[in-house]
Amino acid sequence: MSGSTSHPQPSQDALPFSPDAQTPPRPVLVSACLLGLATRYDGRSKTNSRVLDFLRARNLLPIPVCPEQLGGLATPRPPARFASGDGEALWLGQGMLLNQEGKSMNAAFKRGAEETLRIARLTGCRAAILKERSPSCGVHRIHRREGLVAGTGVAAALLRQAGIALIGDEDL
Ligand code: SF4
Image 1 (cartoon, helix red, strand yellow):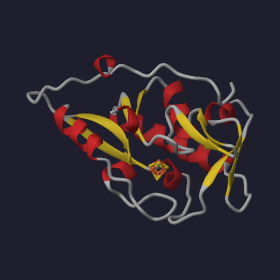
Image 2 (cartoon, rainbow, N blue to C red; image 1 turned 30 degrees about the vertical axis):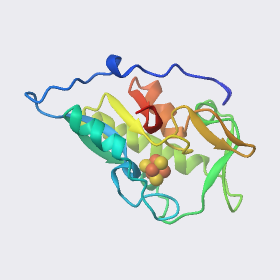
Image 3 (cartoon, rainbow, N blue to C red; image 1 turned 120 degrees about the vertical axis):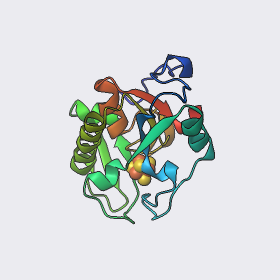
C-alpha cells in the first residue's frame, strides 16, 4: 500500500473509553515524548498539554512507549525519514526508511514496532495516542524525502493492523 493512502480519522466518541471516574483508569498506549519523556531523536521531549488533559478527562492510564528506543536505537540518534513508502509499505516489504547518515532503519523500526505491540497486549491497551509526523508514530502524516505527506509510521501501522484504535496528537 502506498504512503498516499488516507485513513478515516476515528471519532473520539467511537474510541473504547469514556469519561467515567468511578471505574479504574483504562490503559492507553501513548508516545512517550508526548508525556514529557526525553525520547526524541534530538534528546528532547514533546510534551503535549492537550494529550495530558485528554488522559485526565477520560480517566485513562497512560502506558508510555517509544518504538524507536524499543527498537534498540540510542537517544539522541540521527533523525530518520522515509525515502519511499510509509510504515504500511514497510510491512509489505516495500518502502525504505533511512537515517540522516543514509543507513537503512527498516529493521530497527520494525523491531521497535513489534515490541510496542507486545506492550499493548501485555497491558491490555485497545487504543494509542501517538505523535503525528513521526516515522514510527505518525498516524496520518509522515515525513518523506519530499516533505510532509499522508502516511503512517511503522509502529502505528502495526498497531492498526492489530486492531488498536489510533489517535494522532494533532486530532485532540
Ligand atoms: S518514536 Fe514515537 S515516542 Fe519515540 S520519540 Fe519518536 S514520536 Fe516520540
